[in-house]
Image (cartoon, rainbow, N blue to C red; front, side, top):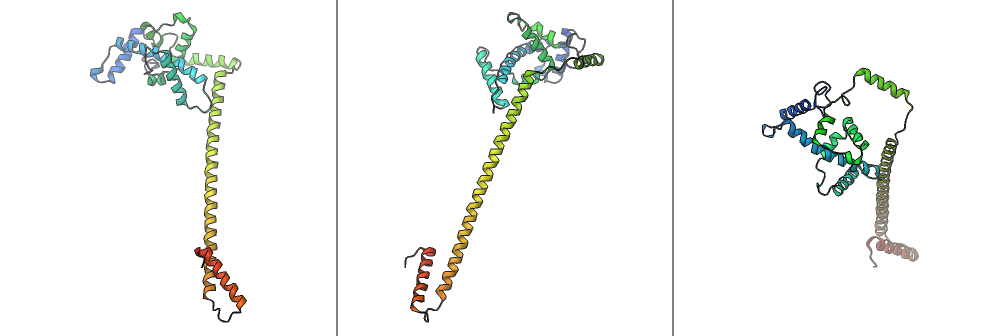
Length: 254
């Protein structure tokens, strides 16, 4: 992709010249025991391209059915499972790293659009097709500044067309963000509620300890009083008060 997007090195090259350039770059960045010819690289990319295109269909289907609360990884796992079910003979999808690169490239999107326009029986991934779509032919060469301005002018003159798929994706993204925000808010409320409950429990324990301290001080004071000169009724109340405090503080019945 880097080679095909290079407006200087890759532009205006024929198919064989283009793949020779790709091979030169590949071989310059790999150990000598892994050097490959242009044909080997082209054939290998042909196999990758076919499977990545298949997986692209599975991913679009999974993405279109994105349920509330699902993450990007959930959608990816659905797509991987769907691919494996559709292509049992080929085994699981092994080129996720390639798809993550190709899926971000406008050239790849354009290639998939051309495939969708073809009749089902004509969608073949032959080796010769690889160079035609990824060497920079007249259709896919980077446009010049003048042509870019003309296209921009045409876009401004055309009425705005709402892309429903983009709108739906934006809505789902907003819904996902809202759900995450709600979950975070509920977690915060739960934590605050738990902290308030703990605070009330500590306040209750502190009040209980204070009450017991006051009772203990009162018991000590009554215990030290001289009851010799007390009237019998006052002395009886004094003894009863000591008994009640003793039972509360020490859980004794005598």
